[in-house]
Length: 139
Image 1 (tube, rainbow, N blue to C red):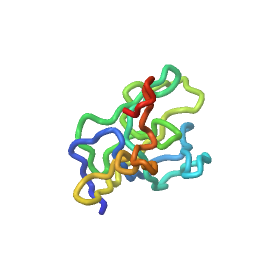
Image 2: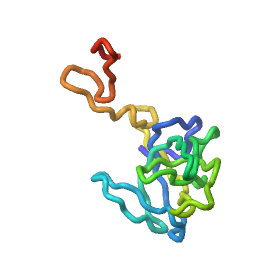
Image 3: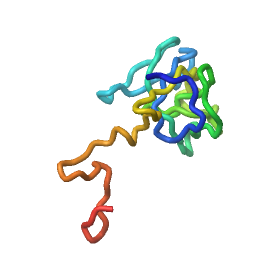
Image 4: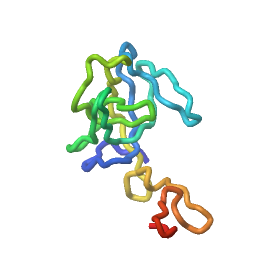
């Protein structure tokens, strides 16, 4: 089910967005095969809310306010991370971050879908992202 308001956005929330303009330089994203795809005005895609820290590019965060249909956010990385620009690098070689309009969020089993819900499990039940500490024990 698609809902149009996220009262408490958090890192990893899956978001449906629409591209507002195709005249900005930073306008590509990776598809599910890792290939870069050019995004054009009115394209719709699924991204993930997240923070992006960079010393050479735009810096952005997950908004600290509710997100509603029609709100403007930005493409923060080619990996599909979207959020709110807090520091734009006007001199970056790729141009400005692509402006996006929020369409909505995916709700499943009564909760917003987050990438944490999609983690793969290994045969022994551990998450693929679990780390081994120095004693070879999972944490």
